[in-house]
Length: 317
Image 1 (cartoon, rainbow, N blue to C red):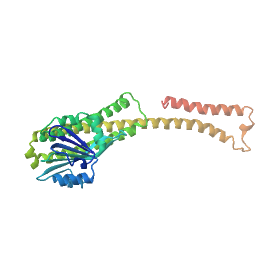
Image 2 (image 1 turned 90 degrees about the horizontal axis):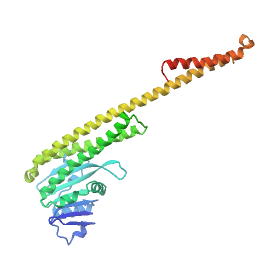
Image 3 (image 1 turned 45 degrees about the vertical axis):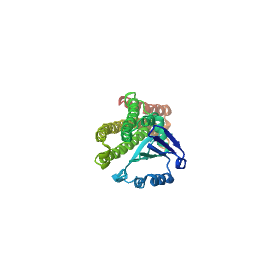
Image 4 (image 1 turned 180 degrees about the vertical axis):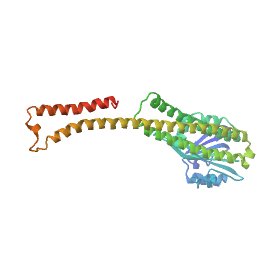
């Protein structure tokens, strides 16, 4: 699917590139959603763009995230977002800036998420007629998005910490929640680091000399630094929360072990007495005592009561 913003601010939507054969593509922005090989070949043949960045985007080299030549500047961002199952995942998004216009390639999942979360995003772009300003708006949106998704996760972590630390409510599922939040925070951090690398490299590129938004890039880099500080604070808070929960679990386990110890002692002493008088030796004078049976019963009762008094004074229960 394609969404095209023309220079006259009109929006054209098409299922595939075959529908564009009779369309005057005087555009600023083309968004390919769930793009195919035929879409890429169509762009290559019509606009002469290089798509080598898509072939090695999983590499950690900076060339897999930013490439430039005389005709274009290519960007790869691994953007984290919440899918339909409310799980934070990431998918690659490719942005190609050229003299022909701005090209965006993504799958439908992040596109649907952005449309739900930022319903007016395309309206902003539609109102902009200058191509460089559209590119600048996209860069600013990426930074704002990292701030938004980090703020969202921070609120969730703060709410969990408030319930566990202040209200002292804790469930066994909370450890899984802490692990998931930690993974989400790590995912955002990793993506933000790569984005920072891309912005820094672009700031020194030849394309930046053509477009001239260096001040914007530097401002966005400063904003990303602030977001990174919040992410690190989330890590610290999750570590403290995990340690607190672990300590609570240890305390609960210690309490259980203490109760088991009390029960074991209270049972073992009467069992010892019963075992002694169950040996059936011939010479056991207590067996012929008239009050032997009640005496043994009383001894067994006291063997339970005395340990209970002892452990009560030790404040084991």
